[in-house]
Length: 189
Image 1 (tube, one colour):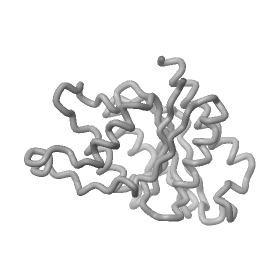
Image 2 (image 1 turned 30 degrees about the vertical axis):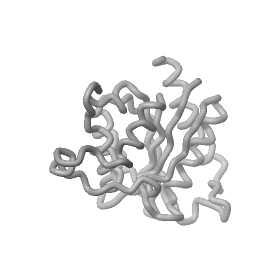
Image 3 (image 1 turned 180 degrees about the vertical axis):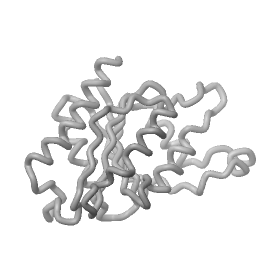
């Protein structure tokens, strides 16, 4: 069975990106995948520091996240856009999880896995300035980034009180990302 790890690169409690990735996760479930939706706030990490790694090893939460990544064969990632880039907390998570452990191949938690990326923003561009930067980062760690990135504009009005996308067409597009990442994972298996 395809296992998909889904998360948003946001710490905000009512993050639009958490809602967005949850919609994509529903699409992956509908495509038959087992989906693990996590909140990265549950895995606090210090800023990446080579001295911490050299003197103490990886923090416990980095090891937990690394095991989660390794136990899934596809990813769904949403990120807010800050100054045209993905969030610092997302970059920090990737930096820690990418660090090899003894007996582990480089980038083992990422290499060869398909990933669908998306972002939600209150602005008119809908995180579209950030997505190419995130794509480049994920390609660099040897992931297969699906070409259908999605940027949700006007995120402040896009969700109802239950956190569901108001526009059915948009909901279909976002669920389609989840379905596409499952299809790609099956083809790569």
